[in-house]
Length: 343
Image 1 (spheres, rainbow, N blue to C red):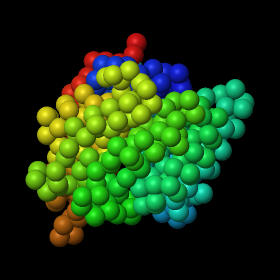
Image 2 (cartoon, helix red, strand yellow):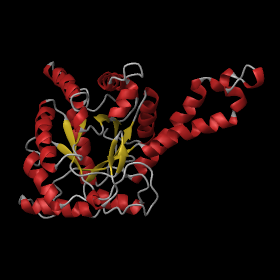
Image 3 (cartoon, rainbow, N blue to C red):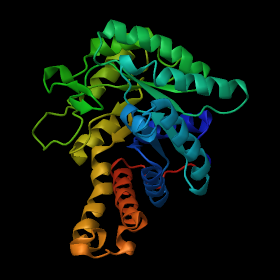
Image 4 (tube, rainbow, N blue to C red):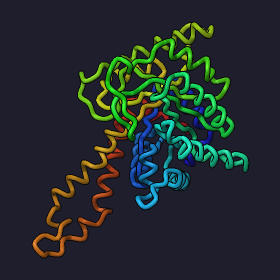
């Protein structure tokens, strides 16, 4: 199917929230990892989200120029072509973008989509993320208001992160401490600044102990039940019906989460969960196995000529794609999106 239109993306998110499931949002850094994500979604019969971080876009831009915008646009254009061969709806998203990279990443990409929409086309990306978690909440929300207006004009959904997620993501680092928990006051201030859909749709990355990267259970304390407190606090403040869930939440830093933690997050309004660390490993692990098993073929040992069949990148690349696609299927099952694709 073609890349999701703005209307389809909104419908996807609405169905996820109503059905209490979430879409895996898979970080990609190449055309090969893009195909792995698309294949995983297709095999799970799940719609999904593919996202590109600033570091991923820089890598895609090539090591000569490292141009983030060129890299992101090139992969998005490629995705618009190849996604038609997969029987699922996929939205394109850009991941964490801090303040110092807005002018070199999100704002130029918004301009690209604005021009497309003015020509009567769909935007290039369906959503963009503004990561203001390193700023004061006041500054974060002021920039968020500006970006939300620009995004809405281009039929794009904005994602905002209002409080820190621990660990490191593309150079944005936060300590693992008690600040990793969003308060009801933080959520109310967000709704006051950005509205509750009336100023444009946005996804909210709230913090409930999340940490980017690899961590063992017990290293941090995840409190996904906190999301219920945020929903109820804002619903009460804005006179919403009891039991309503005004926010569309995003789960960041979910590697190592238990099934129970994920289930609680879904009950409380999570519609998108980011995956990067686990899928990176799933992609690389089969490559390592191939290299160790065929070391005398991928290397020209003792003056020999090696074995072209095993050092051909296609030989290990196919295994890498399958490994990552399999992990995407697991994510769909964990987030209960398997078999839910829009027809």
